[in-house]
Image (cartoon, rainbow, N blue to C red; front, side, top):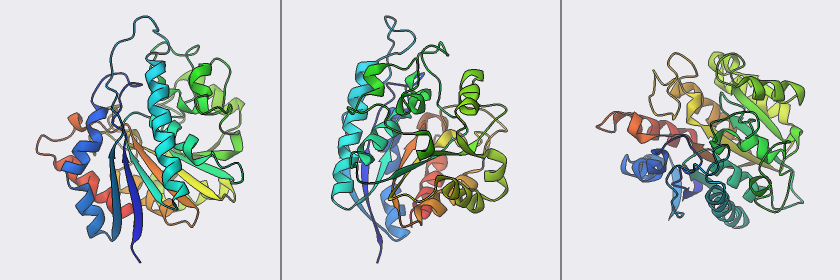
Length: 300
């Protein structure tokens, strides 16, 4: 039987540092994602796009920009993911900035009777707060808000009526880069809170084994939620991530091999693809097409 996946477009860059990510859902479809998934043996139900939110300046709130729209978008994603799960469907959220992942986790954790675990496939911990970094971009503060850390914005941390949304033992970071990608404050928070991590070097060495180790660290769960940040991929090898750090990160194949190992588990509920900026790829969409085929193959 083919795997059935419900596709949810979340075209938002409202929490980002700049526009561009809001184009990802439409351009991935244009690059052939639906056809690639069908060819890979995946049956797709495309529910279209949620309301879009494009980045804009918010000088009145320089340390937590556009929070009202960030919350609105995350709630929209949460509702869509909850509907898919309640219908017995596996979901694929195409973002969009990283706060789409907060919405997906919110939607997946509404059933109090289920133990939900999150694998955060990302070089970053996203454990910054408005008090510890001055960029004001909420998309690298998402995990801090899900954990209800001190200094987070109550409106966002409580966006689904529950704070904290997650406990420390419900999330494992896969591909975390201790040295280069994280701010000093979030690195300190990761260590102080003893967060569970599988390092970038492990992902690079053996993606499937790294994914299995992440699952072992997470322990038994009824529902597995994956957050796939495209920034975990070395920009020099596949230039699609929002952050364009060269010579750092995994290859596209390593990242999607790890995703494939996670998606093959019985508890897999769905994945959010975040931080993909189509403007960074080749003009002929060759980069997007390569990413599309790799993503489709990972979801078999």
